[in-house]
Length: 148
Image 1 (cartoon, rainbow, N blue to C red):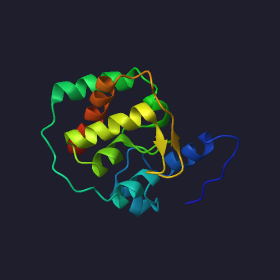
Image 2 (image 1 turned 60 degrees about the vertical axis):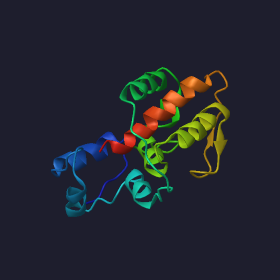
Image 3 (image 1 turned 120 degrees about the vertical axis):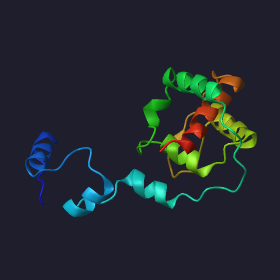
C-alpha cells in the first residue's frame, strides 16, 4: 500500500479507508495489512519493570488523582496509552511498582520536574501542586498498571 502526503492527512486517511483498513485495527490486523507497531507499542515492549512489591490500589485515591490530572496541564505532554512529548501514563505504571516509595518518588518528579529517564524530553516543574495532590496523581498513574 502506498500513501502520498497531499496538502493534508485527509488524503491518506481516505486512501487507507478505501482499502478497507479501520482506525480501530488490532495488532494482528496491522501485520496482515503491512502496518508496523506504533511507537507507543514499541516503548511498552521495551520497558524493564523495576523490582519491587505492588501494594493494593486505593480506588478512591486513584479517582481523586485522575480528577487532579484532568484539571492540570498533564495531558499537554502525556496521554494514558499513547506516546506524546512525555511517556504514556501506562508506560510509567508498567515501569514502577505501585507502592509508597515509588508514589513518593513520582510525586517529587511531578513537583520538581526532571529529565533523562524517558529520553531527552524535559518535564517542567509544577511547584503549585501540593505534595498530597502530587501523591494522589502518582497513585492514579500507578493504578493504570492493572488496566489493560
